[in-house]
Image 1 (cartoon, rainbow, N blue to C red):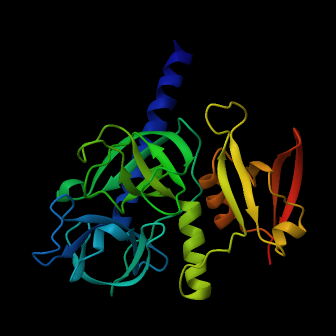
Image 2: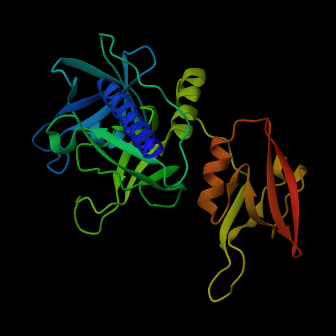
Image 3: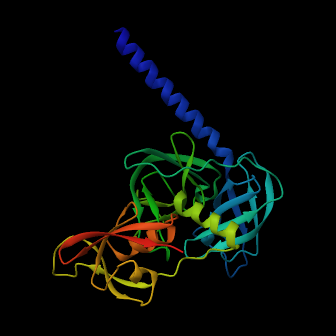
Length: 305
C-alpha cells in the first residue's frame, strides 16, 4: 500500500510540474492581428499566432499569416496590444519575423523530441485568444508534405485550428520544439489530427543565416535527384543522382551519376526532398553521405566551403 501511494503521489507531482511548465510558456505566445484590405481579407484565418524570441522584442510567425496585411498588431495573453512591423520573411519555409517596441518574455527553444513524446500546441485558435491543446509527436523529419519549398516538419495530433499558425509546439518542460504551421486536410481547415510544426532546427538555421547575411541563403546543390525505385520496381527507397555538375565539390568528393543516396547526416533519405532539407540544414564542415553503388554501400564525405 505504501509503495502504491508513493507511486501515485510522484505521478501526480510530475503532472503538476508539467502543467506549471506549460502554463509558464503561455506568455511567450501572442496573437498576431493583421489589418487587411477588403480585397486581401483572409476569412479562413483572419488572425494568427506568434512566438516571442531573442531579446523579447521579436516575434516569430508564419509568413502566410501576414502575407497581404496592410499593417500588423500583436496581442499578449493578458490583453496588451502592440504595433508590429515585418522585418524579414522567408517564403521557402513560410517563416517571418516581426519587431515590437516593448519587451515580452522570450521562449526557450530546444531540438524536437521523439515519436510518442507528449507535446502541446499554444496559439490563437479561430481568433478566440491563446489556448492550449495537447497530444503527442506522431512523426518527425517530415518533408515533401507539399506546403513549402523547403520542409522539416514535426507531425503531431496536438490540436491545431486556423489562427494557431505561427504558434508554439512545446514539450512537457515548456520548451518550444516547433512553430505551428499547417493542417493536413482534404476539404477544409478542420482538425483531423494531422498537424505540422516547422522544426526548431530549421528555425534556428534561418535565424543564424539572417543574423549573418541579413536574409536566408541556401547552399547551391550541384546534383539533380530523382525518387528511387520507380514503379513497378522494388528495393530500398532513396534519392538517385541523375546528373552532377563537373567540376563541383560533390564530384571531387566522389559522388557519381547513378549513386543512390540513402542517408545524409543523421537523416534517412527516402526521397529527394529529404536530401534537399538535410543539405540545407547541415551545419558542420563535411556531411557523411551513404550511397548505394553497384549494390554496395559507400560512405562519402561531402565537404562544405
